[in-house]
Length: 328
Ligand code: CP
Image 1 (cartoon, rainbow, N blue to C red):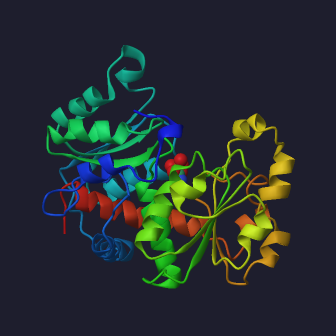
Image 2: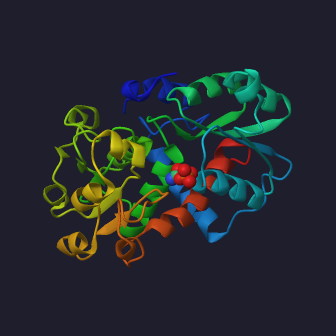
C-alpha cells in the first residue's frame, strides 16, 4: 500500500484490475479510464433507482461494509441502499474487526467474509492501494469490491455522485462547464476521483485552489489543471465550486489559523456574491462550517450539498445492483 505522496490520478493498476475482458467492470476501485459509455448507462440506471423503479432484487444476498475509517454518508448510504434492495447487511469497523487487534490482514478479512457468502464488499481504508489488495483477495471468490474511499487516491462513489449531480443540473454534456476545486487538494481522494470522472464527461476547465501547503503548484502536472493560491482569482467566472474538507490539524501544520483559512479560502456570502448568480456550490461532506464555508452559503439556495447526499443513495443502489448480483 502507498501513502499520500505516492497517490496518483493515474492509478492504472486499479483501472486494469477492475475491468473484465469483455469491458464490463468486476469491481469499482477507481474512476481512472472509466468509459463514457459505461457511465452513461450507469447514470440511466441510477435515474431508475432514484425514481424508485427498482425491485428488491438483492434479496438473499449478503453485503458487507468494511470500514477502517469513520464515515457517515458513504457507509450509511451503502447500508440503507442495500437494505432497501432487500440485501442482508453486516458492518465491520475498527472495533469489530480482528485485524485491528489480532493482526489479521485486510486480505484475510476479505476472504473471511467471502467464505461466509458475501457477494459484495464496500471498503474504506486510510491507505492508498488497499482497494486493489481487497479486490485481489475477492477475485479468489468471484465477488465484488466497491471502493468506499481509500487513502488520498480514490473515492469513486463520491465522484459518481458529484458527476451525477452536475448531470442533473447541466445535462449530459459538461464540456462547457468550468469547475473549481478548493481546499486540501493534495490529500483529497475526492479531488482525484472527481477530476477523473469530470474529464471523462468532457470538462475541460478544472482549476485547483488552496494554500500552497495543501494545494502545491506541483499538482498542476498530476491533475493537468492550473493551480491558484488566490481564491478570488481562481473562482473568476466558474460555474461550479467544489469545496473540500480541511482537517484542523493540517491547517495547524501549515502555520495557518482557522480564521486565516476562512478569510483566505472560505466561501463566505461576500465571495459568493462575486460568483455567477447561478454558480453551483458543492461539498462532499462532512462540512466544517466557518472553515471552508459559511453557514449562509452552506444553507443557501446555490448549495447542492444535501442534494449530493440524496443522489448518493441512487448511485450506491445502482452500484450494488451492478456489482453485487442484481445486474440489469
Ligand atoms: N463524503 C464522504 O465520504 O463522507 P463520509 O466520510 O461521511 O462517508
